[in-house]
Figure 1: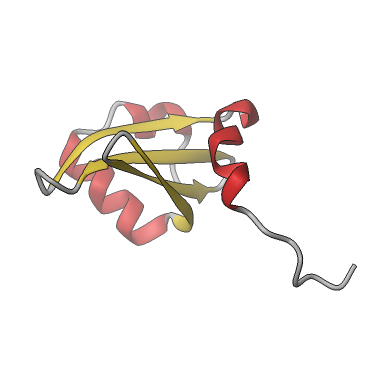
Figure 2: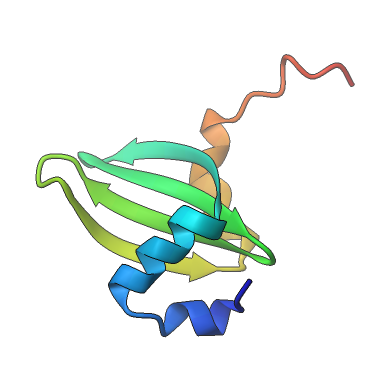
Length: 83
C-alpha cells in the first residue's frame, strides 16, 4: 500500500488503477446529478466523483478527515446488526 501523500501525486490513470486493485468500496451517494463513490485503503479514504451523463470521472480526492465522510452517513443502516 502507498501513503496518502504518494497517492495524491499519482497521475489520474494510476490513481484509477490503484483504487481498482487496492481500495475497498464502501458506499456511494448521489448529489447534483453526480455520483460520489467512497473507498477505503489503509489509513485513508478516497472519494471518486463521477458524472453519469458524461460517463466521466470528474475528480478523485484522498483524505483522512472523518468529517468528510459525513455526507455518506444518511445512507448507512445498522438496523440488521445484532448488537
